Figure 1 (cartoon, one colour):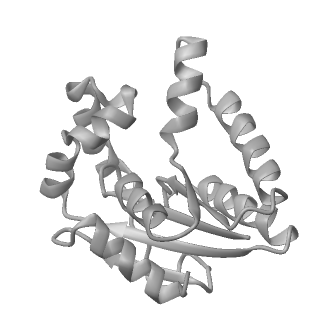
Figure 2: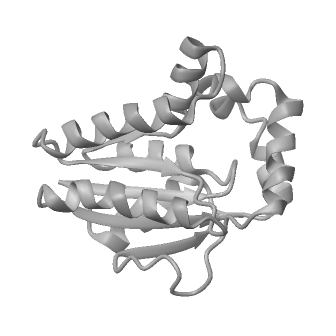
Figure 3: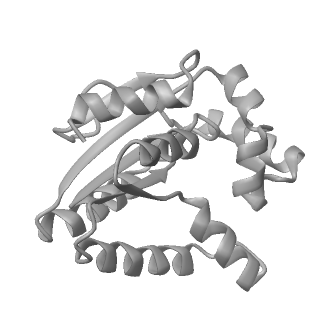
Length: 182
């Protein structure tokens, strides 16, 4: 069992690279908005507790499923210790089940992320991002916290950082597959 956690700022390409990685491996994709949008639709608002609880059930059940592995996407706020604890907790679920955990950090310049925020694939798969004014504002809000790690900060042994500003998603996916021998 493998868990590939793809982190990065909003619209850095996490979901799209994850989709491409799943095409060339036996991994399955669980992007963060699959739970965010579901809970928001049901509750009529963002509910962090419901999102975290739902994700935990999915992680625990998937870790014991016998499947090849899972790609999970997440925006890790490095200015928040609780985000680091959360990611390490997710990794621990898979490690306890005998799985291997890999961390991929995608970074892209801000202008490219603003452009990606409007792509057809993003808007198709993330209903909550269709309000572009609100979605753009979230990207600008990221300037108040840190979505890129400092050298060695993640603490993950199996770690890869990719500046994918000018790299297509399929090429980034191939880099991940080759680097981790997936």
